[in-house]
Length: 107
Image (cartoon, rainbow, N blue to C red; front, side, top):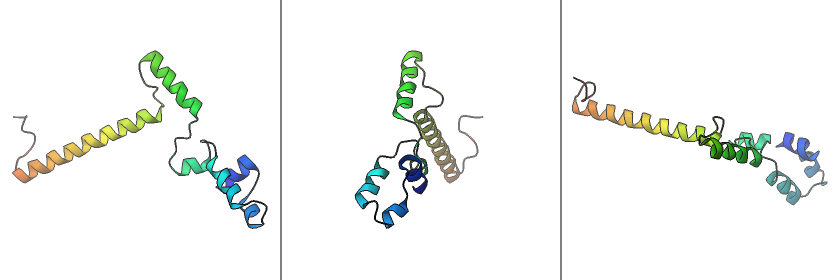
């Protein structure tokens, strides 16, 4: 947060302790940090601006394929892969409980 305050507003937390900034001013500056800020990245943000999201959406509309760098696509793929892995683990556990070896579809 200190680095973001210095980079975007040329101020510091010290300004708050010295009385040059009020708590409201610090809160407003933190609330309105840009998406590229270090705070946003530390909190798990994508570091993309609204313009970049709109460009990804335009590419998706024109090509009918999502842009490969779109973090929303990456998150969806990761969630899908996690669901598949969990399903495989449940199936493996169930086969172990039933005393079956391998897949029931293989001979």
